[in-house]
Each structure stands twice: as C-alpha cells, then as structure tokens.
Length: 445
Ligand SMILES: [Zn+2]
Ligand SMILES: [Zn+2]
Image 1 (cartoon, rainbow, N blue to C red):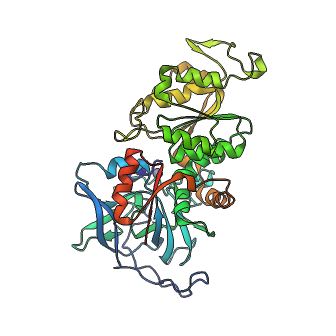
Image 2: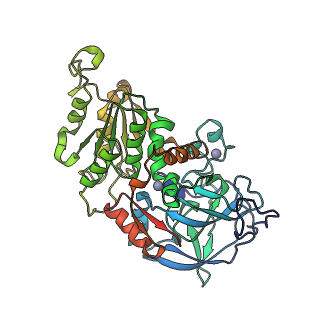
Image 3: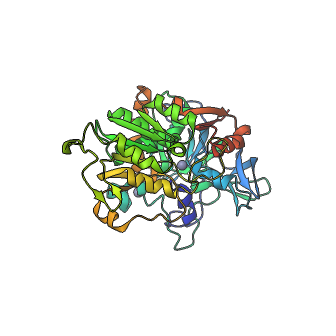
C-alpha cells in the first residue's frame, strides 16, 4: 500500500485552504443511532498511540476542529499495517507528532456540514484509499488512484492539518490524514465506507486495508479465472487475501511462497494448494514454480516445458497470475527471515514465474531500483499490474467483501492472530514488525 508514500508526497488540492470551521450540529439524529453523541466533538480528550520525538507511546490529546468535509469517528478496532512499522519504530527523531497507520473502523460521532456520504451513528470502515467519484482518476474508473489520496505538493500546502493536540498545544497529526490508532480519529468522507452488518469490528477493520487489498488483487484488478494457476509471494495479511481470492475463484493451483513456516501452514488452511520455502528452494525457486505449472504433459496445448528458450531462460509455461505481496523486510524478524530483505530479487522472481501473456502484480514495497531484461520486458508479454490496494474500489468492493465475510466465503477471523488493548498497541506494532503474528487487532474499550 502506498499511503505512507502518499503522505510523504505532501500537499494541497486546495480543499483545505482557508480556516477550518466547527463541524455542524446535525439537526436530526439518524434513526439507527439513538443515544450517540451528536454535535461538536472539538476539544474532547482522548488517548492514542503517538510517534513523537524518538518514541512511540500512548498519549493524552484533545481533538481540534474538523474540516467541513471531515468526519469524527470513535474507533472500535484497528490493525497496524506492516507498511507503517518502519516509520513507527524508527529511532530517528520524528519531524512531528503523529498517530500511525492508514485505516481503521468505528462509529461516526460527528460530521462536518458538507459531509454527505455518512451519518452520525454509521459504522464505517476508513479505507487506506479514497474514492471521491469526481476526480479524473475516479472518472476513468480508477478510484484506486483517486487524486484525493494522491495529493500533489506543488503548493507546499499541508494536505492534512493536525487533527489533535497535546495538553501543551503541540499539534498531533494523523499519518496520511487517517491514522487510526487512537480512540478518536478524523477522516475526510471520501475515505469512509459505511457498512451495514453485525460483523465484529476486529474483522471489519481488516477490510479497510490489508485483507481487502489482497482479495482485490485477484478480483478487482487481475480477474483470476477458474482453473488458472496463481502464485503468491508472501503469506502475510495481504498475501492471504490473494490466496482466498484464488480459492473463491476456483483456481487450479494456488502456490504460496513464504519463508515463515506458520504462515505457510495458515496459507494451506485458507486455500493454498502448494507452499514453498524460498530459502530452501534457493536459486531453483523459479524453475520449481514453472515445473509446478507445466501442465500434464509436453504437448503444446498443455504448455509443456519443451517449447523454446529466451536467452538462457527456459520458457516453460509459468503461472497465469503472480502476486508479489512480500515487500521489503523493514526489521530483522523474530520469525524466519526473507532471503532478500530488499525485496528486489523477489520482484524479479515474481516476473520470472509469470507465463508469457500472464499477469503479475507488484504489491509489496521495494525501495531499491528493480531491473528487468529489456528484450523480455518488451517481448514476453507479461502485464504488470500496480499493487496500490490491489486495485480496490473502496465504495464498490468493500460492501461486497462484507457480504463474503458474512457468508464465510472470505475468512477474516483466521487472519487475526492476536488482540490488544490501546495500552498494548505499541506491542502490536512491534509484533507486526517481528512477523510473529499475521495481523494484530487493537480493540478499543
Ligand atoms: Zn497498509
Ligand atoms: Zn477521486
């Protein structure tokens, strides 16, 4: 997910220009929300995990006034994303106080006067990507690149002003304008997806980012086909979403590659047909995958291994769909380590595992440049799909995924390894970094 990068991109569509105003008192409380607090929440005290100075700990804050298009949400559950651990646990001094993460789940307490999408009392998933419906990208059918998320910083304007402050007045920001790891969060309505279900908060929060991104990779963007061969690098919460997309599609094979044994075992439970340890496979990994995908024999229609070479590479069939959901290794884990912590080699292997004419999606973060042979890039016909939330259209897809979780078709429960209180939230981030859990969910009292 690119939200961390989006935050770093900086500022300014102009939406936030001008002074913030107090959120409006709603004149009529919605029927589904009797007894909930309505009206202004400005000045309200709350607690949250804050990265400030060189530390990450739970702090007391007060809410600042919201923008006319923002929503105040009482958090119910949040799952820290691996993308944020590198910054959250850094020992370098933070440039500003910030509540980490970029998704969450809770109940709407108040809305700004221009908000239309949600009402007070709604249960909302705050997704890592917006869907404004009005920008060029949304109008081209690509809300996974909604311009509301991808602010430009040409004007040097801070896109998301601080949403809270410490008792001494020091401003507190929310990472990517969302945060999530605090009792109260604010979000622009474009990120809010109201959901109407009795599913538990701990499962719903996974649909704001990790699990829904993985599932979307297979259905919202690449369109897995029944009987196809799917390869997934990385069996974290994103990769396990891809695995489930393969299972739901009726993929012929779902081959999962992860060095961590307990993750491979969970992948088998959730729909993998084969798992491979990339450390044990070593340099033979790609050939092993191609062997698994070669078909029943060498006849042409089966895509056997004897139909040619490109340079030194055997052009056996390869997988129809490959998803790289491993990402770089931000810290040495307490579980089994990745063979390449930079993830560069993994991206190249994902490309190499894909058949000619096949599809590969790159979802994990890789900070180093990645090179591909130019001739292969031009001639071997692999389509590279960008992995920003797996192509998720949050307003279209998340309500669908809620139904699939309700029906037991998507298993969200199995992806939750451990639950934490807010006071234990730093440990949740640490465990995420250590890769001793798939997903840790912080539940708010
Ligand atoms: Zn994320
Ligand atoms: Zn948009």
